[in-house]
Structures are given as C-alpha cells and as structure tokens.
Amino acid sequence: MNCNDLELRQEVFKSDALKIISWLDDEEVSKYLNESKNVTKSIERVIYTTNIPILTHLFNRNGSFYMITIEDEPVGYLKLVPKGKTVEMVIVIGDKEKWGMGLGSNAIFQGLKEAFFNWRFDEVIAKIHFENERSKNAFRKVGFKADKKLPKEMQYSMNMKTFLKSIC
Image 1 (tube, rainbow, N blue to C red):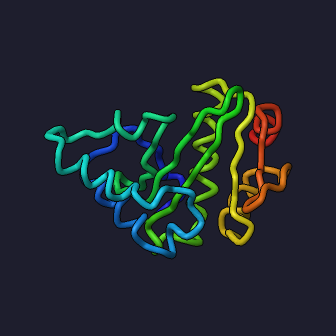
Image 2: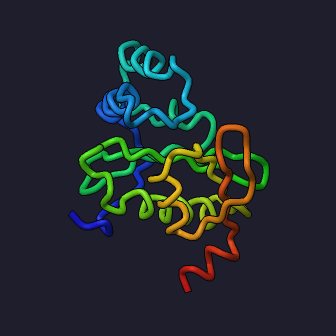
C-alpha cells in the first residue's frame, strides 16, 4: 500500500454507508467525533428505505462529503463544511488497521486541494479534541497551526497562502 494511492471519491454507495456505520459504532474510532448519537440510525434508515445504490446526495447536505479510498477500498471519510469564507474539515480514518500509516495527513492534503482550488475557500479550519493526539499530529504535519482554544477542543487553521507556500 502506498499513500500516493489515496483518493477522495465523492460517490457514496450503500456499501460505503454500511462501513461508515461500523466505523461510527466503534468507540475507538468515534470517541472524539461530534457526530450525534443518532447518526448511525439515520444512515441505516436511509439504506433500508431507499432503492438507489448511490447515496451521495444524502451525505452532501451540509457540505461536501468524500470517501477516502486506497485502490477503491474505503478506509475513511472527509467532510468539508462551509462556515462563511472558511470551511471546516472533518476527517475520519475508520479502518483501524490503517492507523499510523500517514493516511490522515495525506487525506488532509487532498482535502485542502479540494477546499482551496475547487471550492475557492480562503481558509480551512479543524476543531480537534484536546486529547486527540493522532489528529493533532496529522493536521500539524500538513502545516495547520493552533489558533483558538475552545471549551472542548483546539481550533487549527490554514489559509490558501500558507498552503501554496507548502507545496512550492
């Protein structure tokens, strides 16, 4: 497996939704997420009441949703949620066997390209729970800086100018 094989795929299939449910039901994967406790029930309801194989439109209601894949196999997901001129990035590597392989920072980099080049946002933020060392390390590795202490988490950010400097 090569991190360069990582891709963001916008299509969300029923099989992807089932994987997302299993990831969110795993306490180790979901303990730092701000997802509502009912989110897996909502996804299950959609899967079993919808006859369409692609559920992309349902996952893109509050922003842009991407499956993180390696060789077409889902390993996690990334969301870009607009907040005015900024966008919040949420990333989950749900496949625990892939933790510690650099996939998170690679996916963040791919998400930054989407946010800055395709969606034209000025700044990307990430709100990371104080104890979530893996996420803090992944975002810092890509160049995010801590900029605001919130009640339960630290906000990290990166603007387009900083991103462009990092790739040149």
